[in-house]
Length: 217
Length: 179
Image (cartoon, rainbow over all chains, first blue to last red; front, side):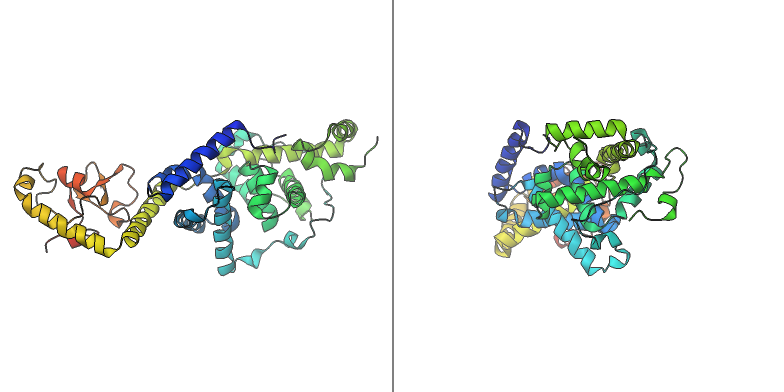
């Protein structure tokens, strides 16, 4: 199962990270660049998923990395560095979002109960969006637009699991929720995105249309 | 065993993540074979996962990494300085001034300066990390606005920069210029 996530490669990476962290703590500060390099994209994308604005996301990402550097002594070896760094990034981005009162556009799905069953409303045949079309900016923008319309708790789970490829366990740890919650939110996020994109035809560059003009929830 | 469409939707995500046991998987497979609606939902959901999982979906702004490293570098120097304290920095400066005076004959033999108008620096801590670029004339603090988003930056010590003929930037290193 993909969620075991504790492969030999993972363990080797973790052990080399532990060595780097020890040396950074001992004063070799320049090694911090090496430590964070594999996670730069993730840090930015996590911040962007919450703030939905390039400049804010970049600033939050920088701040999160600086905090990780300043607090590297507080990092506990039993955790994964990537999880810890993503948590710092999420906190930083959430804090900024709260400060900037960006919840004017808060989608109503945030208030829905996780436990309620999600019922798809549109069974139209999926017009497949081929991966090659991702080369086109307008396709990426439409996908980003659909993602942005999800409630925070669904978007956060989806971004960590399906975009950063974290395991369900890691996603749960990072967000501080149960694996059952991750699975429920992930299911909803995926189904909602499917419905949002079902009407989008990448070949015609049509506008992202919600099924018959009505949001499916 | 028969399963309803509602039950299938509840498991569709776990099915795609291979998080269902073999018995349930067989039941779901059987359902998909006979149900167009659920197959449409399954295919669409799979496509969502494939599309968003593609690396191209994450667009990092141009120069992001460079700006991040620059900010980090400025911060590292800050933290070192606060850790060691200003006393140590001041002591280093005094030692360096002494060393510069002693080595004045050496510095006159140092490589030609890159700018004939600029003054050589005075009292620059030799181990201070500075940033230079190949065609430039000055060395800078990593956070200096003069270097903008150049991609050919090198980080070296102030000693190396001076040996290579770089002079202090008039903006970020002005404390090391005589006037």
